[in-house]
Image 1 (tube, rainbow, N blue to C red):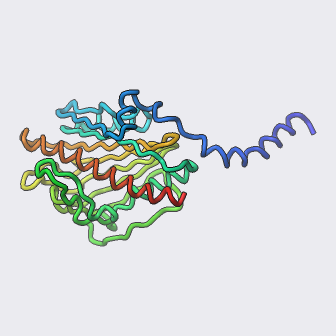
Image 2 (cartoon, rainbow, N blue to C red; image 1 turned 90 degrees about the vertical axis):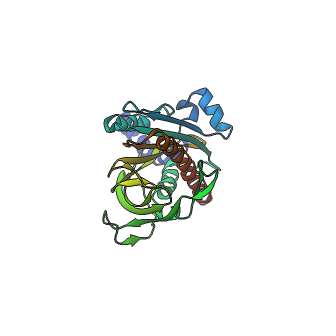
Length: 268
């Protein structure tokens, strides 16, 4: 056998071995994506928040990762009036292969029906308040036929679903949910398909409110980054309430994600 053919045979024999073990070696540490100060805060159990207003609204606490760079470019093209960010760190109870971890997180993000009944802290009322009175996937943008949550067996590159959600702040609305994935992340984007109101005050026309979640996998944790953005012309008093609401809602979504992830990781 020639040297070339022996080398080719060796590569063929070793490929399945590397394919089996490489998922355990995929992830960079969280320090690769965060400043030392931000990482210390997150590891201490804190959350990071930031808000930006005006046509120059932009991101300031996003992880240093290509998925966040793309998110930044999307926002730059949308020119929102309000941007509210929140960043969290969820420590994995154990490590698993990247595809298994991505699939678990992806199925959590798309389990829209399980958001029914979650609560968030209302800054104006100084108490916990019901977030979603009702949340369900639906068959299309007309919102007529409710669909149950379901789990996928593999992570797709991209997927679009629709949902009907009723919350006590913004009322009963239809949303388009866009999910996508990459080598070491999964993400979601929800977009309102009808005019939204904060109480009686209109705050966003159709497709004016966008909520993004990015789950970025590191070696021993998941960075959970949430960004709410709106094209909303509102008076300053209402704008402040809107910023608080966005931030507290991001915290509620993260708590929901973390609780679901703790259960999912037991099965990995």
